[in-house]
Image (cartoon, rainbow, N blue to C red; front, side, top):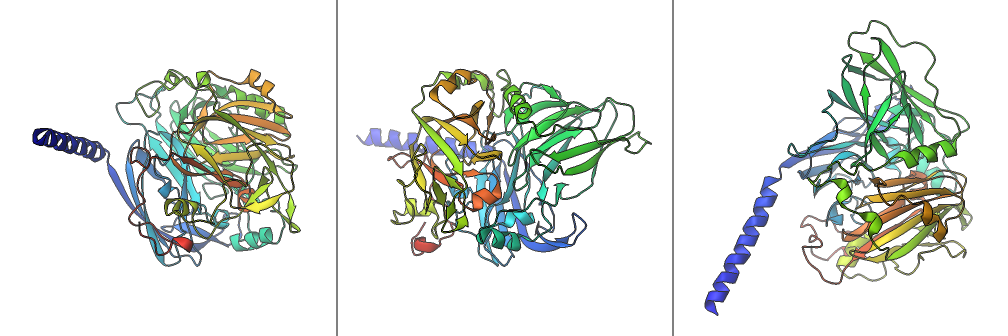
Length: 538
């Protein structure tokens, strides 16, 4: 018995040593960011914006798959603040997701250190403020995850890599916009479009070389179309998913989405317009930048390259052409297509219908008739400490009921390792954009009208792309498949920030009764405590 005990101890020690070696092999990157207000004039009018280390947009994070990030965020604003890492899955670690359902906001003149890993991911992502209406003031930035050297990419290494954070913008301050929403008014039409926080900027490259353009829609509510005068866009990645390398003369990027395209500078040496324009709007706003050939002596000229107009069918048809590259590796050595998602039995179907009801005489947004309100205590903390009365697991039904709208802190329970189908049913006249934290998912179908089980006949069950944000077109539906392999409390929300702020969101509690580090990490020792969690100990 003593010998068996010694052997067991040795095996445990070896296991701990092996685990520590794995962690030690993954590099750590340390950052200190200070969040302040500052004054800039991106549309020609001086206005207050949110700066990170004095920068607008914030610093670009460039990391490699499996890097560990330790980021000390110091809040010098006059309001509580959080950043969320849009598209980073936070494997087993919803503690670091940076939304109000998982984290206490960082009080003014205080700090919080995020610790998370870009585990098994590559691609183009972003970060932005999740608190109040701070996103309307900036505080966003790029988060690019590059592949490890031993993992091949399915295209020649580009000569350069340009990041474009594109989005609608308001001259009005974030506090005034928030007050307007609180009073029951919708956001007005935006004042302009910015590229990297500017109305005009330039990207330079050598003739004959190929460059990657990473394009993210960091705006509040408006779908955008991106194009470059005289040049084709070869799509290679959407939100961490290598794609079939189709070429487009322009591409739609909806709120919260990211794409990466290759552009070969194969035209006569001159300067060319880069254009981002609003989609599905009566008034079309444009932002322009310049693609400058380094041997160019000729400035931009001619009309802006024309983009698509109000063409929902065109956009849906283009969306269906974005497909998974089955033979390409992503963050791991095995090909993406080795996971046969289309052959897995669906455990349940959830149909989510967005709406814009009046509740107590004020405009709200809702999911299946429930408009979400934040609790004073993060749901994740309430769940961990078994604090009652913070959230409800029975207020939100898995199909629309047609009952009158109401307000709740709604959580939908789910079991770890379920494989579920989610249908985004959009019965409104505006494009929706839906995001799920903690996951990517297969976007298997788009269609007009009402979804029915017969709609599955047109699903792509072979090479649908995985992404973290999917659009649902007006009076249409979008279907996704999700493998719930990441335990935690995960925000499913509208990426249109007005709609999220006024209730079009809820949390998916992916759970198993067995508490194990194999499924989920422990609460961080530095976790901020607030609300009913005060007095509990991590």
